[in-house]
Amino acid sequence: METQGAYDTKSVGEQRIRKEYRPLTIEESEIVAEIKQKAIDFIDFVEKFKSKDPRLVAMAQTSIEQASWAATSAITK
Image (tube, rainbow, N blue to C red):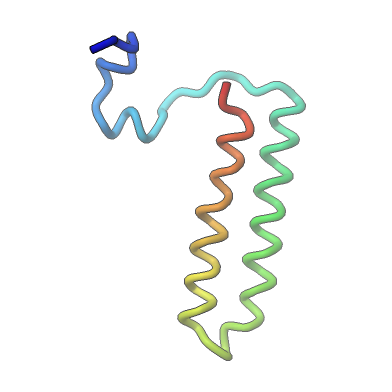
């Protein structure tokens, strides 16, 4: 089995939840901010429909939160 360096010495939790991040470039920071703002706007938009079906709105909002992981993929090298 090939080793992956320091990654092998981290616990599962440390592998999934990074505690340290490299400094982002200005372009990367702008991309992350844009993705997060779009997620915020969409969550707020679907909130208007909560009185019709709270369960569906909650599921949609959770999915939007999960989709905001795109911010992480946008800056992964």
